[in-house]
Length: 69
Image (cartoon, helix red, strand yellow):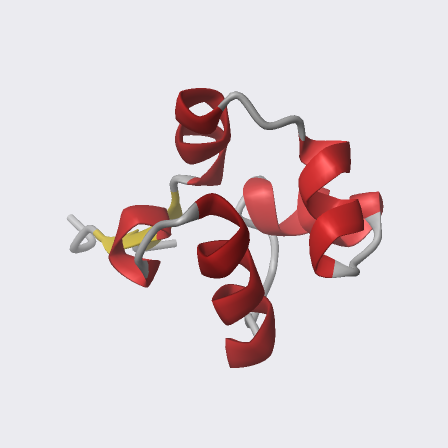
């Protein structure tokens, strides 16, 4: 998939564990894991907003596009 999820790097940079983020933004650990691994087919803007607020980042810090070969 040409959209890459960079959430692990942001979590590491902020010293936040996945389970802490999931609890803070109100989603399950399983759903956060699906998002982190890039297996999600969509992301709600409300979820993206909550992640950005919790981690003090921008959407572009989490998501980026790489063209297919």
